[in-house]
Image 1 (cartoon, rainbow, N blue to C red):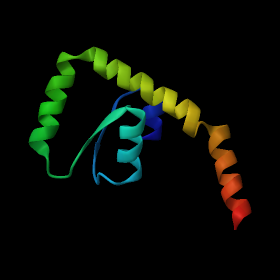
Image 2 (spheres, rainbow, N blue to C red; image 1 turned 90 degrees about the vertical axis):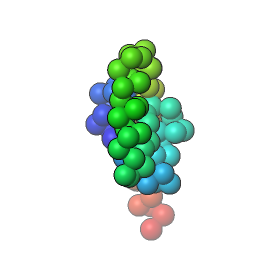
Image 3 (tube, helix red, strand yellow; image 1 turned 45 degrees about the horizontal axis):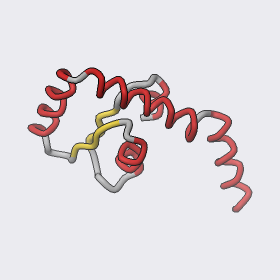
Length: 87
């Protein structure tokens, strides 16, 4: 996910709805979560996105903005440093 967000691309995540990536996608509006086994839903979403490139572009931009504000290297290092100081 982080590489996709850094590249400014929309993420389609297949997995648990309560996991970290699904939560980030929802909060930052930078992608779409689809549950495991929901192949028809995945096909429908891809077809819809193909018809609306402006949505793809907007979500990709949101992914890049989320990366810059939450996951960029200096931010990530600061978070790790703070975590390690707690232990």
